[in-house]
Length: 107
Length: 275
Image (cartoon, rainbow over all chains, first blue to last red; front, side, top):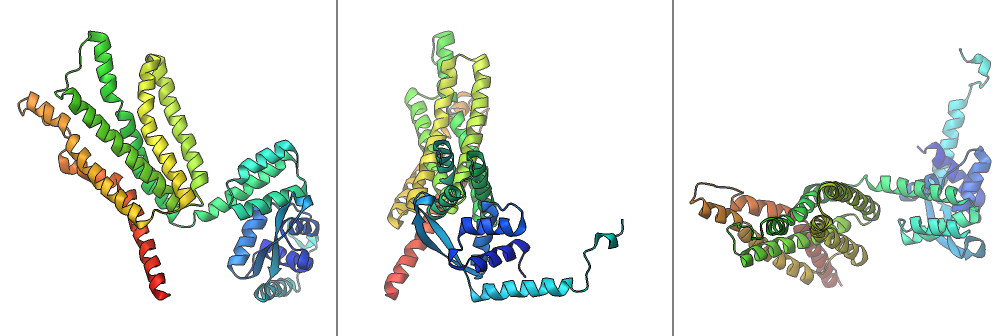
């Protein structure tokens, strides 16, 4: 089972497709969640996902905007797609019949 | 990227692997964060990567087995080397005569030199094995250890300066370098070249055996001199087998270097015969 941040990273990489790399994924996660995302969390999670075989990374092109430094491109594997889909289904199933109205919460 | 940010990020990013370094600097440039934010992001990444590396046993062995067991002992051995010249100099300055330890000048010189050579050799092998055991954690841990070493020795020097003339303190500081400089040199060599070749490891082993035999023999001289002077009434110091045991313990990084070099040699021979 994936962790929350692992799921966010996988969905972001799937959404960005060929443009999935460190800085772009970070911005995408921040836009999607409204929370800040550190490079430390991003790259350590990426390393973990890669060691589990859920993503593959490769060196991309260098651009002048990056000071001539290469990008670390991310591609989600079929196994990664399955893991993200399973996580999503689990959250949906677990949330079925649950109301998020705060008035239902006991003080 | 501003000059300040470039300098800060460039300096800190040296603690990352070369491939990761370029990627992260590129990301920071693209995200256009401020200097402080860039450095804090970078430090966060380094801290997380280092924390992950400590899940393995090698960094722990390097820290406890080499720094804890060998390094601290070697540092105090190096500092104790100042004892003989200090004693001789202070006696000469006070009384205008040589301190009579029961040893001749040449015996004292040989004893001091053999211990100095042994400390340098063991410090080099400790530094080398420390880095070879865990190349990825060695730079960060090494910097922290150097800082701790400088603080501790700086504290001792500061305390010494309160009560002693500066040349005494200097005399005391030089032997500590017999530990520090070879250890840093060994660590750097392991970082840049990896392990020793099998032939080099055999030479290192031979030199180590010779040095252990020499210091086990010479470090018994002061004890023998006191026994001779007291006509057998005083039995001071450690017996030879306990000294040998201590020196063997200080040489375990050498044994590790030789063993890992042998494993690499066997692997190379097998892969050649497999072709």
